[in-house]
Image (tube, rainbow, N blue to C red; front, side):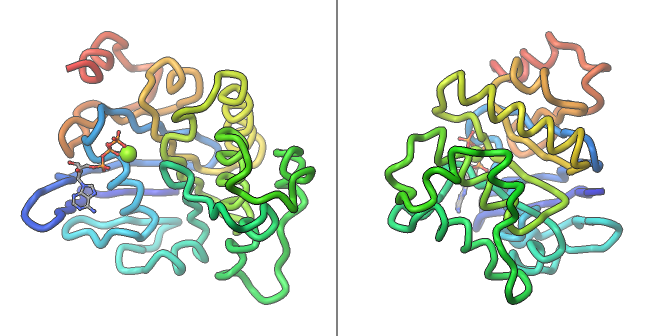
Length: 230
Ligand SMILES: Nc1ncnc2c1ncn2[C@@H]1O[C@H](COP(=O)(O)OP(=O)(O)OP(=O)(O)O)[C@@H](O)[C@H]1O
Ligand SMILES: [Mg+2]
């Protein structure tokens, strides 16, 4: 399980995360909500090891990973799908997937399961990443994270700029990964409706802090919506 304990993060003089705590358990989906610029991506980058936190700690499967860099966290089972997907446009689908094997043991291959989840990628193995549609690129970004065989999957706004039919597909895969494959999932979302359908727990951020959090069943929908519209 993931335990983020009262972490602080500043960019120079500006404080971005203030005492943020978050939990994610295997088989469960934790959804982080909040308006633009409240620190959602900074929190995800901190968990993935791309930002060095200044206070608090991050525990994963009982170990303090706060001081580990991104490659070591990937090896520890933390998978990260960045906002905006960040696939390599000039590499093929196959090559994009193989970039995730850099931190894996020698001789590791792209797991066949990735193509069971996203059959379109098998069909487009030789196509360049930049020639895929936005939805297909998002599927590629998720597939790339899964190629490193993580146990925690962090998804930063996977539905951003994607058409509804593909959003449904992505939601189905996220649910399957948590429910059937026992992944711990942390999902950043702008839209409460989508979050509500998937999440077991939510955390609503306001200006670098978690203003409201807990199991979805205990949430006051109106209170959540107020925090997302102020
Ligand atoms: N590398 C950086 N250097 C300086 N400031 C940054 C950096 N990255 C983010 N920030 C600032 O930190 C704050 C939080 O940004 P962050 O990207 O984490 O927000 P977010 O909630 O993910 O926003 P969005 O919904 O637009 O994706 C913003 O004010 C942003 O301008
Ligand atoms: Mg963001």
